[in-house]
Image 1 (tube, protein in one colour):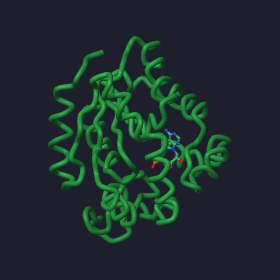
Image 2 (image 1 turned 90 degrees about the vertical axis):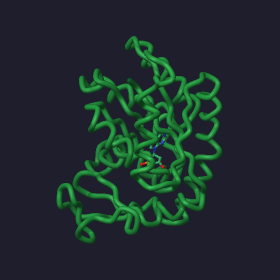
Image 3 (image 1 turned 135 degrees about the vertical axis):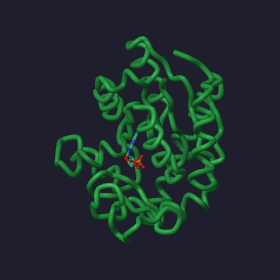
Amino acid sequence: MRFIFLGPPGAGKGTQAKQEAETLGALYIATGDELRKAMAAGTPLGAEAKSYIAAGKLVPDDVMIGLVRELLRQPAGAKGVIFDGFPRTLPQAEALDRVLAEQGGAVDGVLYFDVPAAAVIERLGGRRVCRGCGATYHVQHNPPRTAGKCDQCGGELYQRDDDQPETVRERLRVYEAQTASLLDYYQAKGFLVRIHADRTIEQVREEVRAAMAKPVRRA
Ligand code: AMP
């Protein structure tokens, strides 16, 4: 089963997607995580992505499509895939349809994490990320057991540069301008399920599981 978790930054997609992918043994593809890994490792991809990410802009479509094509080659994808943060533009969505079709597959469902802009700003402001394993926390809504330390691997928690208020505003503008139109694209195909993402992590998880248990379409 292949699911896309769609919605603005800070909607809680990553928190839910990581959990569900682990439970299902599915491949978790988070393009933002991949770009941050590439930046930390100093690869050419990381060097290319750096200035776009710092400015809250999107990395060019051809780079992202190439990256996802590579990531989908992993054997773990046979058990299913959850996409988080991809696609973000119409050309990316169309390319994903083509790449999956080449593999004899298709998108099975799109979960739209619907959350008001004010909540997004508050969530991103309090978000902390583990340097070691990428797990995410929120200083109030989902704090680690020990302040500043990851529950899962003991790694150091940090605040992403692009979670600073100025960059967040730009990321939200970019979401509205370039990503929100994907809702119409998937709605027209009949794939879209709306998730009330402005609730607790546990409540959202229940809705996510219900939505994934009866996908709109099978590959
Ligand atoms: P995220 O972790 O999903 O919030 O992504 C962080 C940043 O990585 C975004 O603000 C973009 O600069 C870049 N990025 C991640 N995924 C994509 C994508 N599918 N298309 C373009 N840029 C992306």
